[in-house]
Image 1 (cartoon, rainbow, N blue to C red):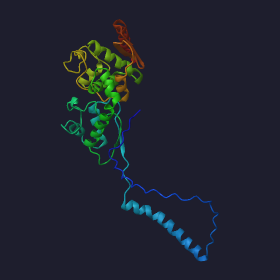
Image 2 (image 1 turned 120 degrees about the vertical axis):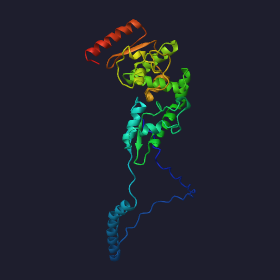
Image 3 (image 1 turned 90 degrees about the vertical axis):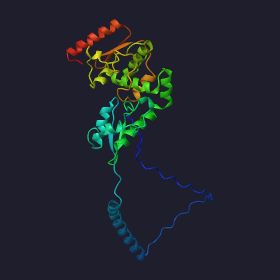
Amino acid sequence: MTYRPSSPYAPPRRPRRPSLPRTPRRASLPRTPRRARLTRRGRLALLLGAVLTVAVGVTAPLLLTRDEPAAEQPRTLLVPEGRRAGEVYTAVDRALHLPDGTARRTATTPGVLPLPAAAGGNPEGYLFPATYPVLSATTPEALLRFMVDTAAKRYGTARITEGARAHGLSVYETVVAASIVQAEADNPEDMAKVARVVHNRLARGMALQMDSTLHYALGRSTVDTSFEDTKSESPYNTYARKGLPPTPIGNPGDEALDAVIRPADGDWLYFVTVAPGDTRFTADYAAHRANVAEFNANRSAGKH
């Protein structure tokens, strides 16, 4: 379900003046109204009034169109769950008809966006996925700030902060974990299980070994990871480095966040999507290797 935040461009409403209490009137029985009879002069006046009313009804909109142009109807920009910051910047530039790179420069200028200190000036993970209104006067700074403000509201709820604390994580670490869950889960139903694998591996001091973090470092989107890839010295290489990566690897949605603070129950340490819609979770390494072999066979047969 796409989250649609309220628009920051709407003008504030003028408060109404309080009305004085009315003195209650004494109820009386309704009277039967007398039927009014029009004189000849009255009928002429009524006819003239009707003609004037029609004339005004036609000309009033024309005057309104000239003197008070109709309000601009906002367009919309959809930011889907899991999109990386670079993809969001491209979408913002296109939505606002700006040269490529404008939104990126705006977002990475120190002090422009109200990011938390833990983010270190990196907007990744805080460009909240939602549908945003866009007007002709919208600036990249205003639109990006709207996204960050929306993320701050969503991440700042008691449900998120208390859920993060219950798992020994900060809110920022929870967003990092949610971005991995968003990228790794084949469907929303698997998110809670993927989150459990992340928690189980962190608790045991195991490397996460998530392909999604490695591909983020390499700037690509794929399900294929080679042995050479796992030798990368990037801090996002969770095959070689233990713990969470230094930043989110995308912008997670509500479902991924919920999965991290409310993971499924299980002892799973491994998972692989053998085929679309068929993700296998296990705590047994031998069983996992068999699942990986089936995944590779499906890939070779073009079934994945």
